[in-house]
Length: 508
Image 1: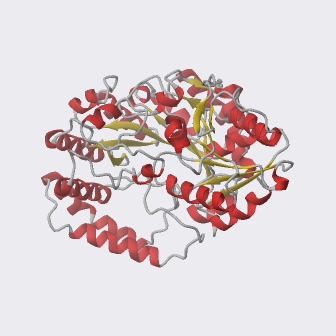
Image 2: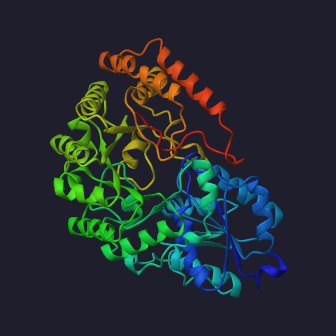
Image 3: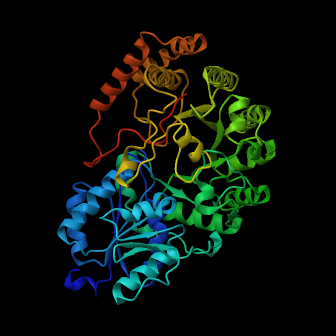
């Protein structure tokens, strides 16, 4: 360890690239930074998406720091995580590297087995990380720090679980360490993520939430939501908040209280939420109209399939199609965009079930112009109820931290979806993207000619989807040419390594 690192008050955080055009401040790092700042530590945040030469910057900053912390989720973020961790270890093998976030929480043992990782923080990391950093400074034993893992004598040691705290007892996140100007240059909008509740009372087969938070939902009171979001958006001139709660609509009285509070404060920001469709369907027209007056512009809902059989396999028996149609109708009547997620190739889905889903999507989009769908190909993640079944069906689970870097929906070849079948589904998803408009977070930079040209491709795309025929996909070729031409006409906003696709790769 460098001579001055023991007395140093600097903590370096690295956030590996997750998204490109829609990047914003990493919520997990903002959360764990606050207790450190209150304890007198200086925080340096390096996000590879907006930081040119991020590797060199990390190596410069760690020279007089206590440790390096990295927050990540399963998937391509692991590639840059390993790259940076190895580079730091080449400079100084004894420099402490701490990994936290979703992936280390779900697979702490395997993550800690990586040679370039010294510690993992599991679950809520605010208190655990502060105690761990204080241990690094004092060289005291970390055995009594709940919720971490470390190495000793070549062995992995996991301390007891740290009890989850109610969200209202957690400190506010350190948004002031984020460079919102840089994110705006990359995205075209000033926006941020915000958390107002944790967990979800349901247990969908593909979801990893129960593996980290269980199913005990807890939330901020309406007054705190209003006070924090109004201050946050005004302080940093944010035009939009993405409320990343797993299920925002669990408590309708809280939802109404939030909307009334925002209207009373004359808030100006727009916001979007996630919720299960059965919860959204309980909202009356008056509720939704009030939420729209409060700035709510989008409700993202996990429909997941148009097949009753597949929904049952997903353990989504709490949802029915009448609720989905009702939700779409009521949201649009209140000028709120209903956005639905679909998962293709879930175990048990066959060609019949897939066709049911496409027909359902086409019906919704035609009956309710303005509704949108985002699709993914199923990827089983650690901690989800379906993971064991997926392994039995032939999924090869990575044996190392590095192996998870390529565990990514767009590139995963499932044992039951390979070759021509996989290619056909990808082509179908491409046509779903073309067939109906969808609105991303990032600013729409298309010119009027490009808009008209892409709009003209929607009718033949819909015809193909109706007739389930995808040979000679000339419309996809033309659409790709338009996108390539549009990209070439734009100068890059930041000179940073970016990912071309994200887990939210979508359709319709």
